[in-house]
Image: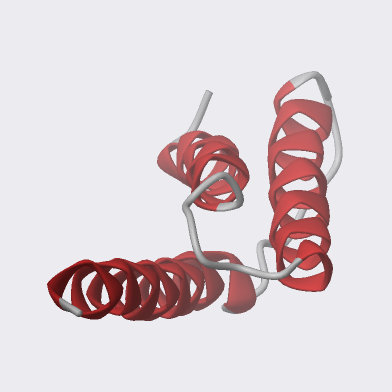
Length: 88
């Protein structure tokens, strides 16, 4: 397995995990989970090949960080909303 395959698989797992963070809508969770499944699936698919040339698009290296940032912002908004409501 090359570093690109490993990163693709890890990116997929990170996005799948981020889909379970609180504060996101069902639509956001579905998008993030689907992206995670696609990235991980592509990594496993390429890792199983014994011949041929495969390319890894730049998106595999950027989208997981964007997804984590978005999920973090949503979780923070959810957490601060809960805290404000408790103070009332």
